[in-house]
Length: 102
Image: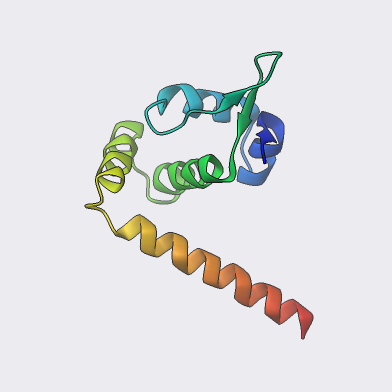
């Protein structure tokens, strides 16, 4: 399943310009598919990577260079913090869904 850049931007709460910039800046970690028109299309895994970029840059206040270093560390398996954070966010989301059904 692929998401357009506008759908991806909406999911992230960012502008399409920001998503496009991150896509170019973090090309080592993101490789969006291009359709016949050349438009970027993102997979759910790439959206998770973009969420991590957003979290590290906005919430943690890291520079984009530091974000790139964190993502590289994660790729090498040495940074477990992002993996744990993602797991906790998924659990939180699931608990919120359960709460809404009560």
